Amino acid sequence: MPEHPVLAAAQQFRAAALARERQASSRLVQTYGRAYTRLSPAIEALSQRIARMDAPGPSVASLTRLDSLRSLRSQVENEIARFGTYADTEISRGATEAIAAGLKDSRAMAAASMGNGGPGQRALITAWDMLPTESVETMLGFLADDSPLHTALTKRLGPAVAQRMSDALVDGIVLGMNPRRVAEIVRRELGVGLSWALTTARTAQLYAYREATRANYMANSHIVSGWTWLSALDRRTCMSCINMHGSVHPVTESLNDHHSGRCVPVANVRQAAALGLPRPEIEPGEQWFGRQPAAVQRQMMGPGMYKAWKAGKVAFADLSQPYSDPVYGEMLREASLVGLLGNEAKQYYTRQKVAR
Image 1 (cartoon, helix red, strand yellow):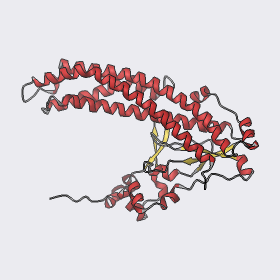
Image 2 (spheres, helix red, strand yellow):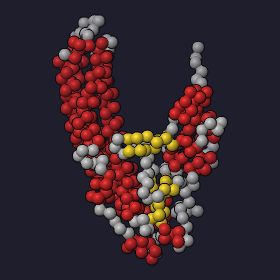
Image 3 (spheres, helix red, strand yellow):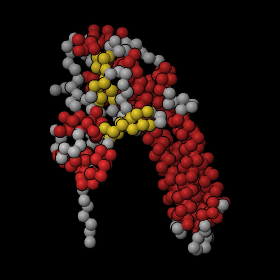
Image 4 (cartoon, helix red, strand yellow):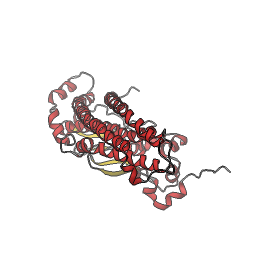
C-alpha cells in the first residue's frame, strides 16, 4: 500500500530541516576549529612552562598567578566569546530560515490531505492564511536580543569555557600531569563548549520549524482541527517520542519535543474528514513498539527499563518525562528508571560479571 501523501510530505520536509541543521553545524565546527588553531601558540607556551616546573609541583595559588596559564585563559575566553557571537548570528539566521520553511511546508502538508492537484487542494491553498515570518519570530521570542539564549551565547559561553578549562588545567598540574596533556585538556574542555553550541543550534532550528508549522495551523484553524505527533520511529528515537507518536493535539498546544528532537506535527484537515478522504494512518507508538521483536525492545528501552516494563512496574505512558528549559519552556524527554521507581529501580538493573 503506497504511503499517504501527508506522511510522504512530512518525511520529505523533516529530511530537509535536518539537512539545513547539518549545514549550520558544519559551519559552526569549522569556525570553532579555526579558534582552536589560533590558541596553539598559547597552549605550547603553557606546556613548556609546566615542563620546567620542579617536583612536587606548584600550589593552586601560585598557578593562578602563572603568566602562561593566565594568558591562555584570557585567549580562550576571547576566542570563545567571538565564537559565541558568531554562533548567535548563525543560529538566528538558521532559525529564521526554519520559520520560513515551516510556514511553507505546513501549507503544503495540509494541502496533501486533499489529494494531488484536485479542486479540493486548490481551494485549500486559496483559503489558507499565510503568516509573515516576522510575526512568528516575534511570537517565539527566543531570538530576541534580551533572550536567555542570546545572553548565554554572547555573554556567558566564553567565560564559562575558560573557567572550566582553567580549573581542569590547575587540577592536572597540581597532580603532576605530563605537559603533553595540556593540549588534550584544552581540546576536551573546548569540545564541551562546541557540543553545547551544536545542540543549541540544532534545537533552535528544529523548534523554530515546529512552532512556525503550528502557528500556521493555528492561524488556519478553520482548516486545521489539530495535529498528530509524528516521530522518526528508528533506532535513534527515544522512548518518550515513541510514546508520543500518534497522539492527537489541538493547534493551541506545542510539540514540546526534547533538545535536538526530530518529531514533527502533522496537520489534521477538517475538509478531508468531511469529504471522507482517507486519513494518514499513524499507528500509536505503544502499538508500534509492541510489534517489535523483544531484542529490539530491550535495545531501545535499555535492559533495566525493559525488565521493569515487562514486570508491569512501568506503564508505557510514563516514559515521557516533562522538564523545564529556560529558553523553550516545558519539554519532554525519556524518563529514567530511577526517576520512575526510586530505590526500587536497583533490582531491575543488569548485573555485570566482574572478572577475577
